[in-house]
Structure formats: structure tokens, C-alpha cells
Image: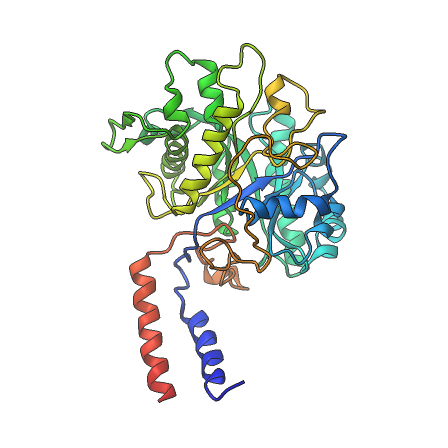
Length: 408
């Protein structure tokens, strides 16, 4: 350690302390992958590690808390959203059950495995099960309370994933509004209070499949096209995914929560489908996922929220041969079960083992919510919230000047 190193260490500590308390910190856009396992022919989780790294993904979303997967990715630098299945929501009305879940499914794997969020249920509000919907928020609150009990609430957030069916209006994007029969406000209050993100599953493929005669294939595949202009704000959209995301932002804004960051918890395109599943092909899957990967690397926000980083989880890592439904459901994977690509995306073989994303910035949050919520929660989460970049640069400049003066 040279003579200047202690000054650098002190500078780092000062910089962290002086970052804006009520402003979120911006991180580079990142790509995640959904790791589903409804199959009987998948490779071991250990063999999945290099496949995840080969696509440059720095995040994984699970639909459970599979111990084999969590152990396999220990010390990999890859962040995890672990899931709690819908079937467990009724039992999680009991705080003791929530405490037990955290003790059994989270604590044994930290900190070696970077679990940053828990998704409680999947598309619960649109499941047409009113009793299950009523269990959702209490389960989320109990899981969060269990995290508080073991002092992990400052490191692990709690959220839930929604389908686009929570929207009553989505076109034009600026008119986006949630369905009035769904009680979303209490959930949004919880997410805001706990510095969590809003997860949405968005599939332009479904829109194209439903009306391929009217929906432009180029528009849904991020290809060159005339685009659409939102009559509400004159913003131009050249792809459907961004329009869907901004419709959700508009809906959040109408309920007073436009500040909540959105993560696209699922999006993808099948490489095979039934005869009536228009567009399901390897060529279109390659275009959709390949173009999406390129856009994410550009750190490009949406037209309505250009300063909010794009954070998406592609569905899915593998084709899953035991899934029910149409053929497309079993063919969303980027990889076949033998580990070979389902189609050529030109994977770079990038390695994120150091915990860094493609831009070289660390993904975990620099700051966490304060111990005392009465002092106000910071607008930051592990989901990479927006910060006013000019304000951040100004504060860093002030700190730099102060530190230079101090060192000299």
C-alpha cells in the first residue's frame, strides 16, 4: 500500500457518504435471464454458469429458490431475483412461515450468492383467483418483515411480477392506466416505501400473434420501421416493447408513483410454435433477442423515460420440454438442453465473474435504505434507480475538490 492509498480509501468513504440521500443512483443498463426448469433434460446448474456468462448477463431470475442453482452460482458475481411460487402465498399470511422461508431459502446462500430481490408470486393479480390476490400484499409484507428481523432488508428487496393484463389502457402509451378492479395502490406504496422496483412481464410476441395482419413485424422485432407517434405527447416509438414499458410508467404516474423503476421481468420470442402462432421462428427469435441485447448495451431509455436505464430479463435460458400450452411455451430458450444455442445470436462469451456489467460498473447499490424509516427512505434500490446525472456530477465534483484540498 503506497502513501496515497489511505487518501483514496478515505475519499471513497467520503464519496459514499455524500451521495444524494434522496436521489437514486444510476447504473448502466443490464441484461438478465430467466432460468426456468420445467423440464427433465436440462444440464446441471454448474454447466449453466458459462452459458449465462456467454450472453453477457449479470442477473438471473428464478421462479423458486433452488439450492442447486444458488450454490452453483456462488462467487460468480451474478445477481439473483429468487421467486416464491403462487401456491405458497396463503401460508405466508403467517409471519412465522415467512421467517422460516427466509431462514431456509435465503440466509444459507448469502453472501456468496448475490441474492438482491425476492419476487413473491407471479402474475397473481391477473390469475382470476381473488382469494390468492388478497394474499399477495400480506405475503410481501411478511417476507419484508422477516428480512428486517435478520437485518437483510437493506440488501434484499421484495416485489412481485405482473402481466401487462394489469393495464386497462395501453395505447397510446401516454394514456396507460391500470385496471380499476385491481387494488394496485397499496402494492405501489409498499414498493415505494421499501425502495423496490415494479416488475412487468411484457411480450410483443403476444400482440403480433393475436393480430399479425395489423401489427408490423418490424415494429415488434426492433427492425427499421415508420414507427408510431403518441398523440398525447408527440413522442415517437419505433418498437412495441418501449411503448409497453412507457404505458406502464404512465399508469404508475396516474397513481402517483412514476418514480418507481420498472424492470421487465420477462420478455422474449419463441423459436418454434404451432401453425396458428404467427411469427414463432428461429429467424424472428434471433432478431428480437439479438436486437434487444444490442439496445440494452446502448444504455438507451424509453422515449418517455430516456434517463431511466433499460433493465430486462430475457425469457428464457433453456427450452423447457415439460411446459404445457402451445408449442411456443416450450421453445423460448436461448439454449437447447445440450447447451448449444437454439439459434445464432453471436454470443461473445463475455465473463462477468468479477461482478461487473459490460460497462465495468458494479451492479449492487452503493447505498441502502436508512435504518430508521421515520427519517424517510432513499429513492434507491437494487433495481438501479434514476439519478439526475448533472446533480450527481456536481456533488462528486465538490467532493473531489474538497478531497484534493484535504490531501494537499
